[in-house]
Image (cartoon, rainbow, N blue to C red; front, side, top):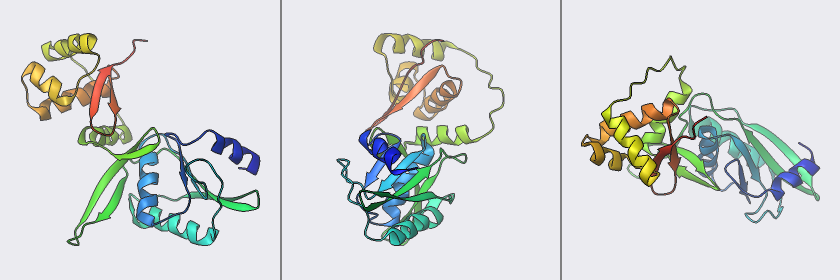
Length: 218
């Protein structure tokens, strides 16, 4: 990417597919942003650009590149190979990391707990933020990375009651559905994810919870 295209990209502002960082503070924080993009639509991570789009540049492109490479090889599971460029703009260097949507979802951030234990969390992009993926979304990401066989879908009374509820109230959570048809949250989650996979309903994520709504008929 040349400087002119980079300036145009920065002018679009942060979004689901674009994240600005003034500098790479730590490999873990960079890994979180990259993981979220891998699990969503992919995108660009720009280091040397402030939140408001001001191009600040980086002091040492080598140290920033090394941190991104460490993030991708150690702090992301499964590891990925970053696509990096150093672009000169207004006599300043910006590190551009292009992230393709991942093919082995869910990608997870490796976290070292205070007690020394290692845990893993998946993240997704929602607008300008990288948020932790719910268990429903994590399960859906797993299905998305698999080669789907023909999905046989049967519509029973539970599904019909869900559709009627969504037509009236527009959206429902796993708990809403479970209460509506008097089943466990676990079973409700499985049914909802199956309907999402079939393209009958869609899932929306925000900072607090997931909710499901009817897909637009084609």
